[in-house]
Each structure stands twice: as structure tokens, then as C-alpha cells.
Length: 475
Image 1 (tube, rainbow, N blue to C red):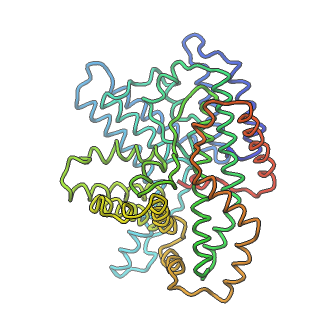
Image 2 (cartoon, helix red, strand yellow):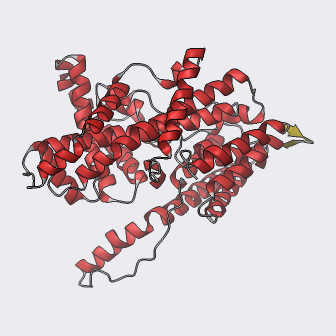
């Protein structure tokens, strides 16, 4: 089930909110509201593929039991460490099987067998269906067991609280990656209020507008440009800019909707985006884009590897390793791996040159422009189906790949008055200074009316579009 669907907006969400606010928070020691959230989250998650809930339930039990062993009073250190290792290995093994087994068999095993003289398909590859959101809820569970082991989070009070934390449907499919220590008190005892609920509705409405009105509008531009064998110079830049807008408004819109839904329930999530295309360097970009993932990699990988406390060579290696794994986390494709390495190389480049980089030699607006161009070259890897297509598209962007005879016809398709207006609107909203999170915290009547108008327009627009799921559902 997706947020931008009539089933969610007109059936699931109204029923959920109605029952949720009629239920008591606790009854005879049972966290009734949390239990209801868990049940409805499993319905939400298993709506299209019911067996997905079994895998998530196994992961939830595994992390909860390991957390109990780790936090047991007087527990021997070797048992605590064994429980932590077991939780990490189990979670990552499930993730590896469902997300990477087909990639490993085709790109490693069969290629190696081919080099040794066997045919290109020496071993058959079983089709493994990727459960939606497995990368997100796996990281959520990992953060819990690691934080409990390090003493940075108290263990969950009971299973109903912990299962609610893992399965909480606003963040379940595509994040943000929340930490138990940031929401533990809210799961145990939270305050519901009309201002908080109204603020949640407002930011949900703006998020739905970002997805349906903006991201879905520019998606055909990106699809047409990337689908062309030889788009030509101008069409290639127009297409990758459209994709940059699409992926931002798609993912940022989902994150805003998740924050809004959680706020309706009295739970506060972190802001996952902070005007990333206004960044003046790639380092700053990664402080503003998918903030919850960046924080996860920093806290659970980069700092344990030594962080900034190691020598320069090791520091640069750690940066590249972290972003190599970040790329791999996004998907089992060489393009994702290379996209991660691409980000890591630019971070190292900025560390090495420091104030000598081109960013600091030009005005601020030019720094933002240069960073955006670097990001867009990276998005080509993210969007292209394979490395060959990415290289070909790069060639079109720098003018070394000549456009096909049909390029003028493609231009007619891409540069319609409607598409030009949609792209201009996206550009305005990308580079304007206001952020939705801060804007809705003090909700005045004019703001409420504007958010209502956005919600109504988004719903009407939604019914004119074909099915268009969130891009990050594939991760």
C-alpha cells in the first residue's frame, strides 16, 4: 500500500485514525494504542504481498530477544556480545539473501565460472522477490540492538512497544530510519493535541503535493530522455535535471508524509531532508540529503572505523568504503555501487583540497550550481539501467555523443509549455529558502487553507495519473 493511493487516503487512514483515537493508551498493562498501530502496520505492509509480514515479524522477534539478552542484569559480557553478533549476522544475512543473492550469482559466481571455462550460465539463478522496505526496517532493528549493547538506549519495555517501533507504518517502507532512543519515551507515553495533529496533517498534505503534483509531473520528462538512444546535448541536460527534481520531490515528499503521519499519532520523527540542492559542496549535500541514512552510516560504520581520528590515508579509505556500502545498500546493481564510490571520491577530493577547491573561488550561487552539476552526473548512474547506458548518457551531456535524427522530435516532446512550467515550478520550490517542517510548526489560518488547497489539488491530480509508486520502494 502506498500513501498516494485512494485505498490509503479514503479507507485505511480514516479507519485507522478513528479507531486509534477511540482506544485508550493503556488497559490492564497492555499498550492498546501501540498494539493497534502494530496490527494496522502489518495490514499496511502486507496489503499486496502478505507473506512479507512473516519476514518482518521474524526480524522483529530476533532483535527483541537479542535485546533482552544483551540488557539482562548481571549478564556475562560474552553472552551480551554473542547476542549482538547473532542479531547483526541474522539481520544482515536475511537482507543479503533477499537483496543480493541474485546479483551475487549472476555477477560473481557465473562470471567467475565463465572465466574458468564454463558457459555464461553455469549455475541457475533462483528468482528472489525483494520485500519492500527490508533495507529500512533491517537498519532500524540493527540500530536498536547496537544502541542497547552500547548503553545508549534502554531496552524496550515489552514486545508490543518494540513491535510498534519496528512496524510503525509511516516509516516502514521508505524511512526515515528512526532510532529507538529517539522515540522510546514517545512510545511509552506521548501527548496528543489538536495543534500537533493539525501540524501533522499540514506537512502530510505538503508531502503528498510534492509527490503527486511535482515529482509525478516531471517523471515523464526523465523517462523520455533516459529512454532515448541518443537524446542530444540539451535534451540530456533537461532530462537529468527532471530526474534530479523527481527523485528529490518523490523521496522528500514521502519523508514529509511519514513525519506528518507520525505527528498525527503524537510521535516526532527527524527531518530527513534540509534543502539538499542548496548545498555548496558534496560534503554539505550529504548533511542535507537522506539525513537519517547519513547519520546511520556515520554512527554505526564511519565512527567505529576510526572517524576523523585516523591518519589521512585511512580516513580517505573509510569515506570511500562507507559510500561504497551506501551505494550497495541502495540496490544490487553495479550502477549503484559506482554511484556510491563516485560520492566517496568527491568527498575525499574535497577533504584533500579543502579551501583550494573550486567551490571557494566563486560566488555562493556558483558554488551551489557546481555542486548541483556534480550531483546530476551522479544521478545518471542512479537512473541508468546499466553502466553502458550511463556512459552513453554522460557522453550526450558533454557533447561527445551525437544526437540521433529523432532528437528534434524528442525535444518537441520534452519542451512542451506544460513541461516547461512544471520544471520552473520545481526549480522555484527546490531553491526557495522555506522548509516545510519549520513552516508548519506555527500553523495560522492562511497556512491551513493553503495546505488544504494543496491536499485537494493533489488528490484530484492523483486520480488523473496512472500508478506511480515511490522511487525508494525498490530499496
